[in-house]
Each structure stands twice: as C-alpha cells, then as structure tokens.
Image 1 (cartoon, rainbow, N blue to C red):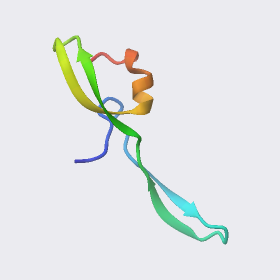
Image 2: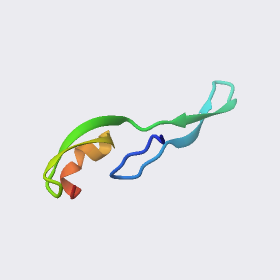
Image 3: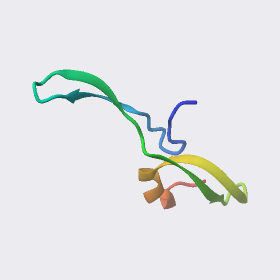
Length: 64
C-alpha cells in the first residue's frame, strides 16, 4: 500500500541530503500520516482513514 493521504492525495517528496562537503545523496521525505476515526455525515457512521496531519488541521473544509 502506498503511503498517501486519502483526502489530499499527497505523496512522499524526493530530495537530497547534503553533507558538509556538499556531497548529495538522495532521500525521501515521507508524510506524517496518522490513522484517525472520523464521523461521516454522508455514510452516517464512523470511518477509519489514514490522513496527513496537515489535512487533520483543515478537516472542517472536507465533506466526508
């Protein structure tokens, strides 16, 4: 399973780790994913989703 936020569809970011001598090695910056139980008004039940912390802060904007 891909580490991806269900609401925002965000994925991991590719980047470089740069040492003091400026040697670049590739690294992956992963999302801060959390498992959260949210009340769904459309389904009228609790649902369990993997969501990023940035999406948790703005959860009131999404219609679930």
